[in-house]
Amino acid sequence: MKITVTKNGARELKRLRFDAIQSIREILKYVPPNDLIGLSFISITDLPTRKLKKHEKIAAAYFKGKKGGGAFIEIYICRLFGHINNPENFRKLLPIQEYGLASTIFHEIGHHVREIRTHGVKKSIGEKFADRYAERILRDYIMDNAGKINHCFDFLETMFSKGNIDQKILESMKEGWEKTYKKALSSEIKAKQNNL
Image (cartoon, rainbow, N blue to C red):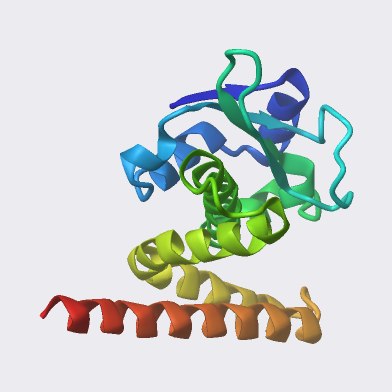
C-alpha cells in the first residue's frame, strides 16, 4: 500500500516528530489483504484538500475510485493531533495517538469494503457498516497494544497529580478506553469460544 504525505502534512508531522508512515504500515498489518484490493493509497495531509459534504470535524475521508483511478483515503493530521502542542507529550502518549489513528484508518477501510463488496448496502447505512468493520479489526489491535495504552494512561494520571491535565478530560478519556477495552476483551473471548 502506497502512503503519501503532502507538503503541509509533512510540516505537521515534523512539528510532532511523528513517523506516521511507519505507524500506518504497522496498523495496516491488522487489515486482511483482500480488504485493501482496489485501495490505491493513503494520503497524509494537514486538512481536507477538497470540499466535503460531511461535517467539518472529520479526521479522514474515503474517496472511491473514478475514471480508472483507484480509491484512496485522506488522513487529516491537524484534525487528529492538532490539540497537541508539545511534541514531547505526543511521544509520551504515542500508543494512545496511534490507537486513534488506527480507529480512523479501520473505519475508512470499512467504507472501502462496503463499496467493493456490498452492492446491496445503501450509502445511508454506510457509517454503521464502517463502524462495525472497524470494531472487528480494532479488536486484535487493542488486544496487542492494550499494555502500552494502559501505560500511557498511568502517565496521564501522573500529569493530573501534578496539575498538568484536567481531571474531567482524563476521566472521560480513561472511561472511553476502558469501555472499548472491555468490549474488545469480551469479543476476543467469544471468538475463542466459537473456535473451540
